Amino acid sequence: MTGEEGASLRARDAVGVRSPVARVCRCHLTPNLPRPLSLPLTLTLSVKLSLTRPMPLPRTRVHPRDLRFAFRSDADGDAGSNTTHRQCECYIQAVLYPLSRAVLFRLDPETAHHVAIRGIARAGTTPGMRETLAARYRVPDARPVEAFGVRFPNRVGLAAGWDKDGLAWRGLAALGFGHVEVGTVTPEPQPGNPRPRVFRLPEHRSLINRMGFPGDGAVEVAKRVAGGDRPYHVVLGVNIGKQKTTPLEEALDDYEELVDVFGPLADYLAVNISSPNTPGLRRLQEPEFLGALLGGIAARRDEVAGRISRPVPVVVKLAPDLDDDQLRTAADVVLEAGLDGLIATNTTLAREPVAGHPLAGEEGGLSGAALTSRSTIVVRRLRDHVGPDVPIIGVGGIMDAKDAEEMLEAGATLLQLYTGFIYEGPGLVRRILERVG
Image 1 (tube, rainbow, N blue to C red):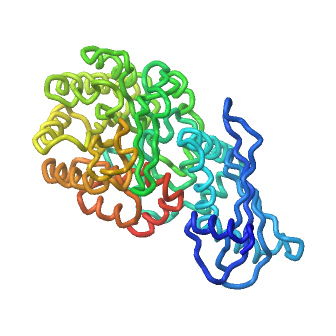
Image 2 (cartoon, rainbow, N blue to C red; image 1 turned 45 degrees about the horizontal axis):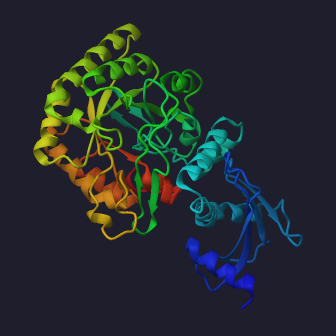
Image 3 (tube, rainbow, N blue to C red; image 1 turned 135 degrees about the vertical axis):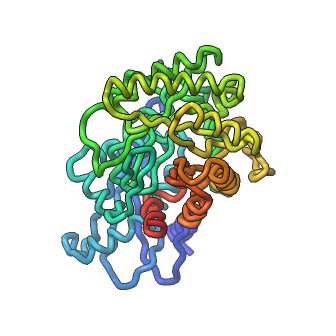
């Protein structure tokens, strides 16, 4: 076996492409890394691709900075032929996303995330690119859903934490999401926790993060979500959280400020009191704080709704680590305050699902497949408690269409992806919608 053939097989196995009938596809990937990581770096992968019939060999130059794929056929092929274009199209989900993921996963998780955000943000604002993505990934006949007075074009959304600063939500709409939850946003800019603060556990299709609400702050994010178009009727949520330095006793001041800013701009607001990565934040779920906090948020919400002459739905995101009594108590307080629904769940501090992994001891919230069972159980228990009419957004460990179906069967009204989107790519939205409508 030649050195190139060995490299081809190793790369093929890394992205899960296995076939005895194959040609070689070379992908040249040139990440545009942020300073101080900017380097003249080009990675070349050779992958054997299964072909149903002969076709000109596509040579693909992948720029993760904008996630564009420019196809060029070999000299013996016709680059303009419809056949070549159709066959190249099929590579996007089957091969090119796994390839780009394989390269991105060679980068530090935050750097990879930065690359993806930049690419999707550019696609969302570049004429032609957004429409191309939408044609590939959106499901135009998906069934809309009504929840807390808002019409969602489909059931599947993107959870808070992915587009923290509202940079890429228009591009994400083109990938098929019916709603995008921006944030978590704090009143002022803050750096979050020290790096490294995101860790991949690929053996478990999971992540651990201890980000700590890094972000540009309310003023900058408000500029990005204000005005402009809402492509594909995407619903825009904003997830709000207190500043790290704000004492718990003064947390209401932060949330009131954020309701003032984003109530007129967003389709709904999500109150984050369940992140494990801001010291003391989860204590706001306790009865000592929760009633007064949510009552104050509801009162400010009503004031804003009166000023803008439309409702401002507010939902509350809960932790998966609450026991049954705590879940019931928290849900009761949410409803007694007159708020509109629940999100279940945030990340977990539990490590049993990943016990023995070298990174299991890292501090932070665990998400992904390791959370699937627990988040589904929490949704089911909340649904049993609050009855059929309260909207519940189910999130946590939805990694495939089967997980989504089980979450809906447990009682979720809407779904959100996060870690599944990272591991499975944009095609996951379409696969879920094709299964559950």
